[in-house]
Amino acid sequence: MECPINGIIIPPNRRPLRNLEELAESIEQVGLLHPIIINENNRLLAGYHRLEACRSLGWADIPVHILRVDDIEEQLVEIDENLIRNELTILDRAEQLKRRKELYEELHPETRRGVAGGKASGASRRGEKRTSADNAFVQDTAEKTGRARRTIAEDVQIASHLSAHAKETLRETTLADSKKDLLKLARMAPEEQKEIVDCIQEGAADVFAAVRKIRLERQIKKIESSPLVEGEFNVVVVDPPWPYEARKNDRTHRVANPYPSMEMEELMRLGIPAAVDCTLWLWTTNAFLHQAFHLLEAWGFDYKTTLTWAKNKLGMGDWLRGKTEHCLMAIKGQPAVQLTHQSTLTEGKVRQHSRKPEEFFKMVEALCPGRKAEMFSRQQRQGWECFGAEYTLFDEKG
Image (tube, rainbow, N blue to C red; front, side, top):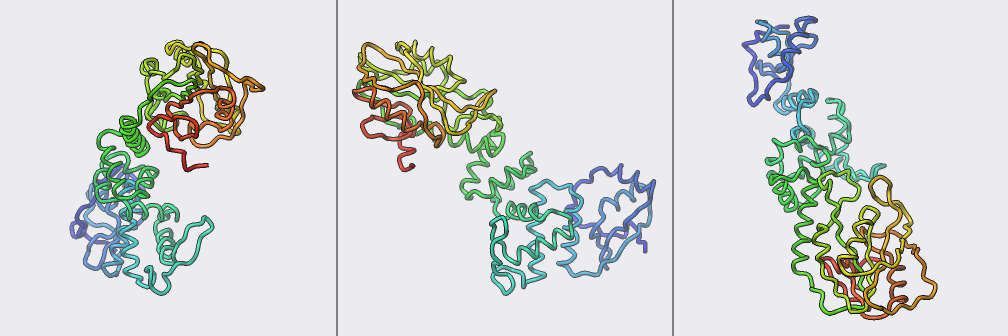
């Protein structure tokens, strides 16, 4: 049957129309293949784009299908129409799916969590616990909209756990259409969400960049309050925060620093607490091998040899992925060494980022007597004096 276009009631808050001219051209060529859907009171339920396209063509009447449904079912039809059109951002789609879940459970109260039939049904093959209520809703939504089950579940999670502040802030940004960023945020506590979203509002590119910026700012505060190096040492180990900052906002950059870095000029001005006779061990990667020699010269040390750490698995790197790291041995004055069978190769398993193998420290302790210090340390060590913003980071880890 047909209905006068001007007699159809359009619900408020309809989104701006997209590609209306293309749709109108298609309808003019092949006709209206699917009638719009209205209720018994001529209120539009589905087909807003088709209606306006036909109006733009000068049609007075339009084919309609009258759906006799209650208010809840009417809202579900409207939401399904929005989801099928695929013109929503991920954030808006998530909100629509969350609302659909609320309506579905109102229409089918037996599927709500905590009531008969809605209790936990065990773990799925992916290890996720899902209730029969979730399964019923997801299955119905997938059938009505063509959406993947995983997409539906993740979108509901986003809408349910994102704070109102996060939604309002991100709605008009490109992140409103980034599933990865929205999911990461939704899995954070509300106070963390606010901190991250505020950082994004101040200019951080995405959640990854915001998390990193906040972490670095905290570490800088720790550096400012970290213990100072006092006295002079016969043995000094240094693992500098090399400036891996060339592509700091590129999440594909393999060797982006998870801690504050220092520019080469700052490192060269660094005071090494060396005794008159001192052995220095300077850690470096392939990327900064050349600069490491300049540091030794700036600090007044004479290079002697290079120790190479052969790692048990691949790491990051530029050009080639790294499976080695180097430690330059240099001296000042005439330090004592207890050379036995030590070689230029040490082997040890890879642990946390920037954590050096225990085999290295055992070798240094056997080779170099005297008072020992580790600068930019991330773990306290018996017989050593350790300095740095995170000098206790690995104390509780094996």
